[in-house]
Image (cartoon, rainbow, N blue to C red; front, side):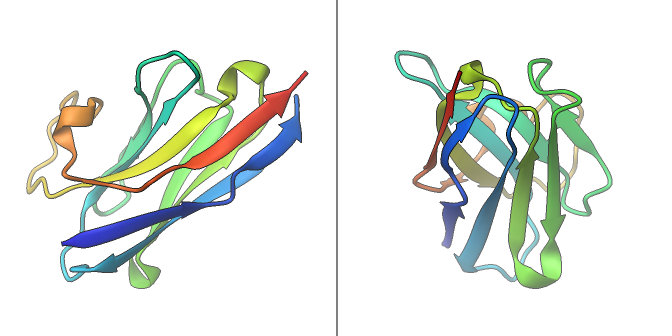
Length: 128
């Protein structure tokens, strides 16, 4: 099994930036497809961004394109989400997720069901 732990959340004002980190431990001998999801109050968990095992391909939800950047460092078993120009509607618990997919297929890694491992989340609150 692999364990994922998120960090970097906090309370910020609209327009500010935050950088979330996801540290992986346990069975990390293989490389995983990684993603970030979020769940706001009273809302369903939604896709934010994902990145392939090599980091060569990234995808973003329309609501965060141009503002958020997902990245990874396989040597350090970490993934990150740089969030700029934050808006109140970005307020949510942000979750890191990992999947053991062996072959990347476009459009099949933007749903919660594609991921086997999940972190416990980090709170991001953006005030107006």
